Length: 155
Ligand code: 4NP
Image 1 (cartoon, helix red, strand yellow):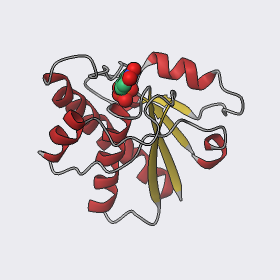
Image 2 (cartoon, helix red, strand yellow):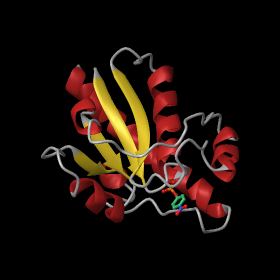
Image 3 (cartoon, helix red, strand yellow):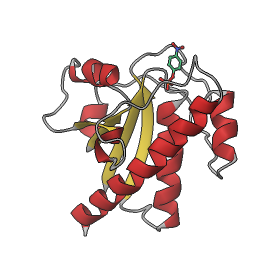
């Protein structure tokens, strides 16, 4: 089993969307027994909340149902998850400062993008509605490539 944790700041916009998209890809390809995912925030500001309504509605239009509840990243996550994929550079700094994080465990989500390699997934929270569709476009492209990589590793 390979386990992936998506991480952003609030765990109500970018990382729950990544989780919903990646889970849909896993299910579509019948990989539920070999790959799983979850999401968390570096902050606990929105602990227990569903994803932001604008994010849920934009995702639903593409067929993704975002049902996860926000939680803060936990030090046990470093033992639990093989990959920790963060949305931006600030998330990466925060995660890498926590005790117990392993060498080579943390990546940016867009490290796997061909079109926007290594860039940040922009935080849509304070921006306009267009930001939510942009986030989904970035996530879909990069996570497709990331899933191919994980599949090759377990093949
Ligand atoms: P996210 O977006 O990190 O993509 O979930 C944010 C949501 C809320 C806040 C920041 C970012 N906030 O400061 O409340």
